[in-house]
Amino acid sequence: MATSGGLAVDLASAFDASPNPYMLLTPELRYAGMNRAYLAVTGATREALIGQNIFDVFSAGPTEDGRENARQLRASFERVLAENRPDHLALIRYAIPVTREDGTTELEDRFWSATHTPIHDDTGRIVYILQHTTDITELERLRRRVAEDADREALDTVLSGNILSRAEHVQEDNRRLQSEHNRLLEMFMQAPGFVAVLVGPEHVFQTHNAAYAQLIGRRDITGLPLRDALPEITDQGFVSILDAVRETGEAYEGRAAPVKLQRTPDGPLETVYLDFIYQPIRDAAGKVAGIFVQGHDVTDNVIAAERQKLMIDELNHRVKNTLATVQSIAMQTARSHTEPKTFAESFQARLMALSHTHDLLTRSHWEGADLRAILEHETEAHGPHRISLNGQPVGLGPATALSLGMIFHELATNATKYGALSTPDGRVLVDWSIADQARPVLHLSWRELDGPPVTEPARRGFGSRLIERNVRHDLAGEVKLDYATAGFSAEFMVPLDREKTND
Image (cartoon, rainbow, N blue to C red):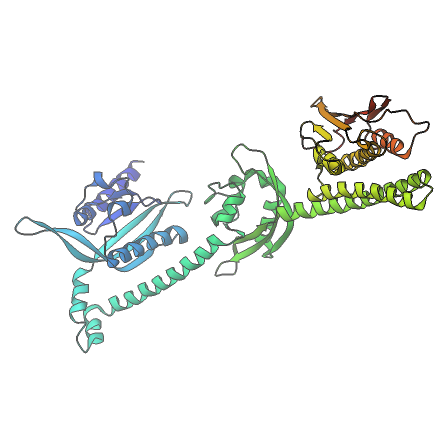
């Protein structure tokens, strides 16, 4: 409307014509406007200031006083932005350029009283900080001149109604409070757990610490409602919990709560587990004004606990299977060895083979074992020059590793007693490969060379029965045993997709 436009023009003219210096800063502390009085006292031009950061244009200077003045000024701006209310600096020193009668320009120390006021848009957000300054240099100089007078308090009262003295006390209190605020803020930001403060019925993020930023993927959430800042959690029940805390004023505590977060832009949802508490924040009237969020990411603990439970369940299962295996070994060995001494030797050897494979699996926390490592364990006593192992790295699941460990022990034992390893010149070649990577199948051959002539046994012994039973029953594979005169050989085909492998 015309009236509104005319009023805006009048206000802009009044702002520019005011004898007191005024300037506008954006929330990033960049110049957005200033009046002629401000340009006059700073000796700058509007073009040189607009868009510049105030602390880039007017540096603190080399002196401690200059640095302290800059710290006070920055702290005042930060209080305006953090607390959304005006802030006052009773006394701050700033030198301005002054032109002398001879035409030279010098910097002259001046003393100012400053007020910083937040300017809001229609939504209530701070869009500018308005600085209004008053030159109190003469009053400050007068106060300093009488500082040595014995009746300073009376003179101060007469000269300024003790206003300056009271203002300095207020400013000193502000400095102390700001120092305490900074310490608390530093503790807040460096807290090992995640922390955030939500305000208003829409749960707007007022502030959050570094741990919270890391948790959510370092998104820019300050000033945003929860639904906009973290849209993926809207339907996970947490907004309802926050609403209940705000309505009832009662804290809520969550334990190992699963939360799905999009921690990378356009990335998948990741499930994390959190211990957290929502604490109501009350205003001076006792009304809930916000919610303090604090907690810890316990994802590693939850995964470890789940893994431990699975391992205990798996261990119970394996112990039962191992006992059944030991029982079977004992019974079959007893049938093949009527003498107690030979029974004890054979039974102990087979238990040691089982133990060796258990050792390998324990080193990997029972996640699996490497095929070559199992073969080396079962054949190392015969020396590397007598047994040649050729094949790619193959990771075996625990059950497959145990079964193959027993099989290789039987093959090595039989080769030592009756086959190639029973003579000085005998050798064993073990070759393996993986077929069909989509559904991997282990092809392994055991071939004995340069040993004594071989004849097929009249009846199957425990070793051959154990091999065939383990391959067909436990491994769902196939085996072919060949008792050729030139040397014994065994061909195995074992599917590996029944357990997780590390091919």
